[in-house]
Picture 1 (cartoon, rainbow, N blue to C red):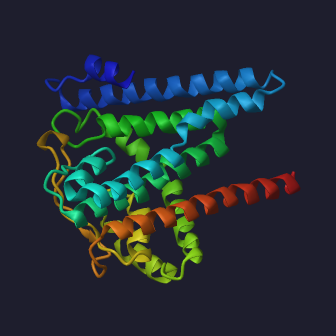
Picture 2 (cartoon, rainbow, N blue to C red):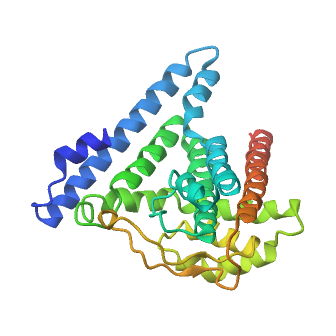
Length: 290
């Protein structure tokens, strides 16, 4: 639907204000359609004996907790068995940057950054909006997040057309990004090599250096926790509109290696456990209060 509306309404020959208004219209149509679909399924489920199971099945495909783990682990495995060349191919499936010239540190850094950022996008944010607004909230978030990944670029084609989707994605991820950082910092309890103190320090200093107002929170936390230097300059396809210039996050840390991807995965598993525990406790408290 996003692709079809992009082809239909996005015209670079139009005045920038008209492009922006067209983008707003597309954002409303896609988000509204997602909300209506979620509402219809949830309303239908409310009249069924096992309606909760139907809602659960409808929500399940939108959580990429296991898929994210497998893709990041595949990068570490590729580095181990096939070297840097194999690692570049593996990490290219989960990042948008050019990977053909990355060394081991670049491949490892890209995998770790993707895991940290996607912990918010693929795990925490979907659960948050599902908890707050049910299926309509979950479907709306995933629609907005998908629009951001497809049209939320600062290039000639999408600078104005995709602005509404990009800003709405920023709004939707504002609370989840900060919760993600909290879960990651809490997860440091599982391993004495992880430092919550250092993670919090880098978070306070460097989260604002990220190009995204949200992605810097989990990424800076991870940089401090694992004592790594993340971010920094990278290469993108010229058509993407993404800037190759980027600040270093956790500049006092070391270069990432394959073993650091393994550490990231360990931290990620623990953070997912903290995330689940958070919702269990929240549900119990709300049940006692109701």
